[in-house]
Length: 396
RNA sequence: GCAGGGGUGGUCGAGUGGUUAAUGGCACCGGGCUGUAAACCCGGCGGGUUCACACCCUACGUAGGUUCGAAUCCUACCCCCUGCA
Image (cartoon, rainbow, N blue to C red; front, side, top):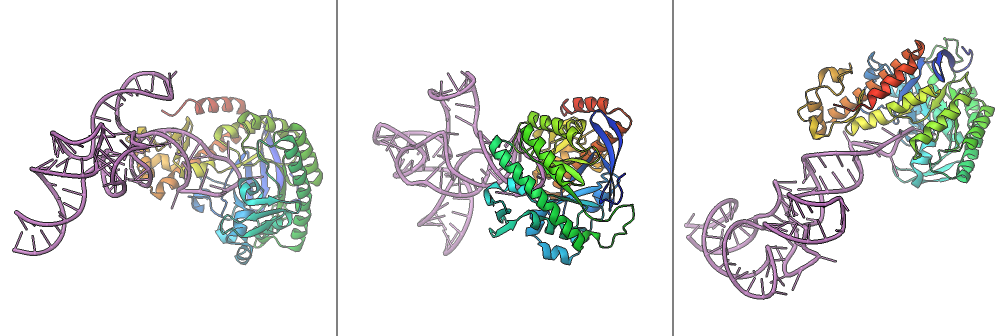
């Protein structure tokens, strides 16, 4: 276990490339492999914090987003309210994305320069300039346990030249992120530190993760990793995947990169993925994941089950008195039928989104719990095969 | 009874002689969603044959009529709404 750092990390068990580990944050332990629900605007949409903390979901860490929270409610408000934990009432660990993803997802609304990114706010059209330094400042005001370096997320179909340019920019931004981040920690800008007892053998500071880019090109990915490790971070992420490239390509990049990433640091695959993706990428050596799928798809009528996806909008469920997933023990599956959930969705009732989101999160988080257990008991290979097989068997 | 207005596809509602199987909305059916511009977006939606291009049939209250051609014009009838008796 690393001590005095911002984050503790140890590998508890390994099976092939898969590993079960423990990340110690200043706001509690996070067992890995872990799925981190996405809470872009300071809320995991459609859920209450009590649910996330409940034994059933037991989410140990959730995300927040720098770009979105920077626009609304804004840094000053966040500072005035004591950081994102106090502002939202979430007392467990947080990880904030840097805004790098918005460089990709809001591609039509920004211009990239060496200095940073000029965004035209999607909220009101105002010009807003985000740079590694600004991102670090906002993330200090947010006070998450894990801060992400500001990167450029290039499109999956980027050419080698484009990907190189982007990767090199990301590398320069990584160094700038590190520098500004360290200064902010020294200055005590970290809003999340307030009120914490600095026990647990940790420094009490925020942790900073670097992000490996390079699109689909192995040479660029390797160079990106080397340059990121050279800067030095508390953890390392693979970014720039599931942004338009083919699924097989994503697995290849992860398969090649994860084993090259420092063993003594947690490895985080950003923005991934489906239940199958999680299993595949755990098998390739990834420890941390986040994805909007369980929450977004919960709102749009799609349930993840042990036998694959179920579209609650389909007429075939109109009189189906069975739960979403007969193998699921979540509160929604214990109480409600597919017929009722379909009715709620069809009538536009907000409860439909709430219940499907709950089930989906329960499924994702429970799956990861089982993954961890399987790795620790040396049964991950079998678990993965059986789980994947069942996933593709189709909902009855 | 008289005077106006009106009856269009599951529904509401455009269209008022010819690219009209008929604009739109809703409903319905299906699909998509991977570091959240997403409680959102896309497609289908009279019937039949066809892999498809395409073709055929049926349709704008009912029945006739005018016209090369009608949901659109004319006549009669039925029904609905409003006002006056």
